Structures are given as structure tokens and as C-alpha cells.
Image 1 (cartoon, one colour):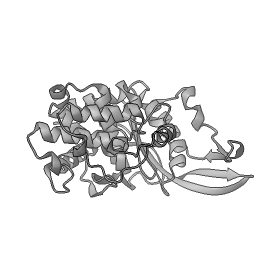
Image 2 (cartoon, helix red, strand yellow):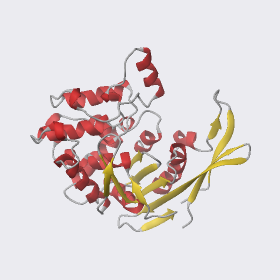
Image 3 (spheres, helix red, strand yellow):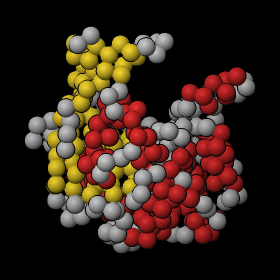
Image 4 (cartoon, one colour):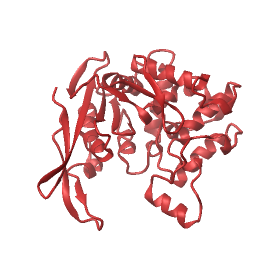
Length: 324
């Protein structure tokens, strides 16, 4: 199948072309539609977070610590570091009686939300682990280690039980053994064929997740739909997608997006060849509609998107030839 393309066009000239590989599957893993290579090796990056959360939900962390949807959703997300996100992560850690110092995501950075970053700077504060976009993911794993009586300080050990359990959950969901590498935040990173990533998300969205994670998958999906703003941030593509009925969705670094609909019984995944973020979101809209059906006006910012200058004036456009 021909690779899809998202183009940046300025003055009628195609300035950049971003190749798109994408696939839509059914519950058997059969390919319903594709662009490019549906078996392309794809590093899930942060798209693995909802799958990594399943061992904690399976083992009873939610009931043990009285967690709400927002706590589980922020653990599944790449949050934008707003005060609400930071407070939710802090509360998540505190419910197990742990210190924020126990969180060890690598590469602390300013909030991804521009407004939150500006407020932090104006207040003379430096970013902490709470603003790190992976802090929720780390916090839920930390709680599980504490609940099981294991050493919370070892949760990032590459060969430790916490990372091994997360890897087993990813393998179970995707129906294959992933290639394992390291992610920026210190967690493991997983590469699976694009088709298997789509299958993993379809299993996450509703029934079909193999044991021992069937109930956990339903719990994770419920939380992502119940608190979609915790998966990324208000008005973000990921949060809007998770607010749709029966949908679960998550992006990953360097042009990855996965989604599924329990209502249509379809799962999808895509990878932008050069990892371009904006190209990913434009292609993601096509994938989301191929999986879940037509979406509403809240997604209009990603339709006919313009390229703007430093004052916000239009100087070009994004154009997609990517269709499924």
C-alpha cells in the first residue's frame, strides 16, 4: 500500500513532506485498511503508558488507595504540567504515604502547557518532577511497588520486577514480544509492529484483552474516558479523543498515535516517518475518523490547518493526502 503523506505548503510550494504509515484492524488483528507498511516496527514510546498501567490496576491499587479516574488517567497520559496535573500526581503519591522525592522521571522539564510554564517562571519557581509529563506514569508504578512490599526505589531498574511486569502487559495486549529499549524518562520503550499496536489498543478499548488483564483494561479505559483532560490537557487532541464515547487514544513521541473504539470494534495506529508532531496530529484525525467514525467541530483546529507567522498571520497550510 502506498505511504500516506502530510505536506507543509508555503506560497504554493511544498516545503516539507511527511510520510505516514497507518493501519486499522479488527478484533482478530486482520487489516481493514492501511497506508504504507502495516507491519512497520514502531516504538510506542508514551503510547505504551495505558498498557503499562494495567498491572497496577489488576493488582488492586485503585481500591487499596481509593484512587479516582483522574489518578489513573494521569498515569496513562503525557500530561501538560498544569497545576491540576501536578496536584493530581502529588496526591497520587501521597495516598501511599510516599514522598514526591521517590519519583524519579529523568529529564525534568518545564510544563508542556505554555500558560503553565509562564506562570511557573513568573512565580520564580523551577520545574519539579510533578510537572514532568511522565510523572503520573511513574507514580502509579511506584504505588504498586509499595503496595506489593517491594523496594519503591528500584521501580526503574531495567531488569527489576516493575519493568518486567510492565513489559509483560505490553506483550499481552499487543499479542507479540516487543523489542525493548530505553525511554527518555527512564522507563522501558517498546517496539512492536504497527498492526499489533492497533490490536493492543482495540483490546484496551473494550472486551478482548487476554487474561490476566481483562478487568484491568476495562478499568484503564474507564479512567481515560472519565478524566480525559488528565491524559494530556484541556483542548488537546488526545484529551478530546478520549472524551469521545467508547474511544481510547494516546500519542507517543516522534509521530506515534494509537486509538480504538469499542463501539465500532476497530483499532488503529500510525507512525510519521520523520517523527513530526504537527504532521502526526493532522494524520491522527484521519485515523481517528477511520476508527470511530466522523467527529465533531471540536476537532476543527486540525482540519485545513494553517501555517502561521510569529504574529499569528497565515503564511501557508498543512495538506494531507493521507486517507484510510
